[in-house]
Amino acid sequence: MLNSVNLLTMQLESKMLESLMKSTKMESNLSSSVSFSDMLDSAINGLSGENLTAPVDNSETHDAGTMTVSDNMIKFIEEHEGFSSTAYRGVDSWNRTIGYGHVERAGEHFETLTKSEAEQLLRNDLKKYEASVNKEFAGVNLTQSQFDALVSFSYNLGANIWSKTPKLVSDIKSGAPLDVIREDMLRCSHVGGKVVQGLLNRRYDEWKVFAFGDYSG
Image 1 (cartoon, rainbow, N blue to C red):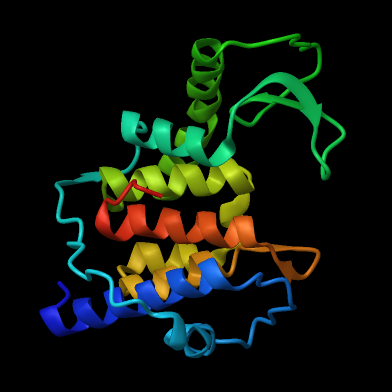
Image 2: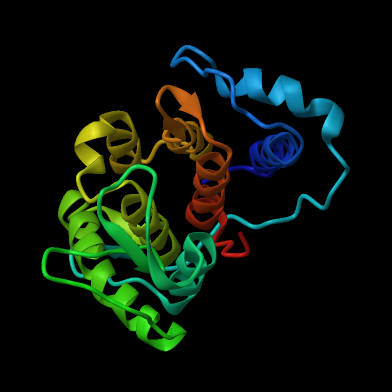
């Protein structure tokens, strides 16, 4: 359990990072040796004195294994993925993408989708990522928001992301402090060795869901 002083410090650091992400392109290289505090140092001048009262998510926990995403997370993913009624090719994929981030599989060919159809497709797609999180964290006590955040994380980065992020997995399973998990998640914001602003923003938003049950994005 975090005491009030540690919680306030963590929330202050989070606001600093949020200010940094709003004011900085973050396109420079970020090596694995760069600490979170280094990023905070760059953000201090941008701190705007916002309210720092977000509570820790003390919701009931469940043993991961059979959990499913909440409607709040469906909306969160929809907002972060964005909606496309027609298929397009992403810069890092030969396959076409449509709806809320659905990548067409072999034999699929969508002409157009309504938002309702795209949401149903998303819900079906997320079953794979729910299963991935349930399998990796089976027996671990997670709140609904923590489970949701991990599903969003894997939906964006791939169902096999857990084998590529052993420290994050270990820290979650061992109950590491939330600020440690925050750093672990923010590390997964790179493409081609460079931090991508959109990925950094999403990792931070996912961490807020994980830590505070804050789905506001």
